[in-house]
Length: 171
Image (cartoon, rainbow, N blue to C red; front, side, top):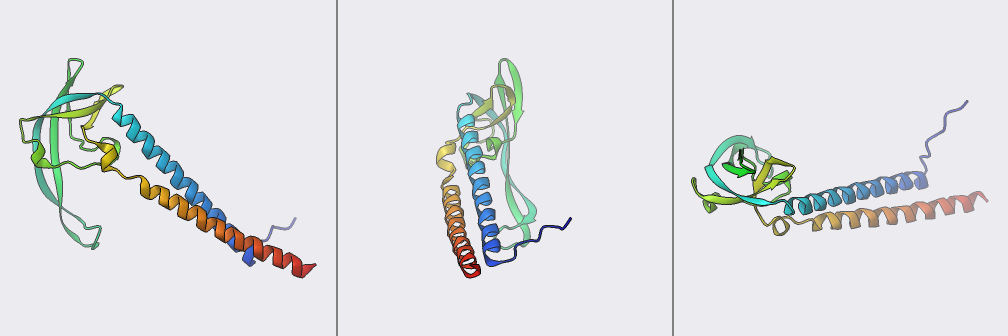
């Protein structure tokens, strides 16, 4: 039994590249759908009032994403307490499910009350209430999906043209 040979001709290479681009576009579309669903789910969570226990900026040594250098990086330390169904909880999350959003430490000084969203199935999961939709832009995923799909279609067209020329020259 002989092993099947890999098609290293131009149509084979271009067809493989087109398939990879379409798979990447499908993955980006699935991730976009997941993020959109997460935002809708979190926005449907109920809110309650929390008391701010800790709210200040600290620094840690981290890699700067722009320069790549290790340097002091700011991190917001936030802690709050809230009550759901007569049970007390403590939270530290700013962004629920890492869906995005901003929080300014001066908005809620220690001791003040602030709204938080909590998961009704598990109230220990909570995050600062924010306008997630306005803070998070899923638009760039749509551009990525469109670009990958278009590029994949163009490359597939070249692969088909090369394959047709190759077949015509063999006839």
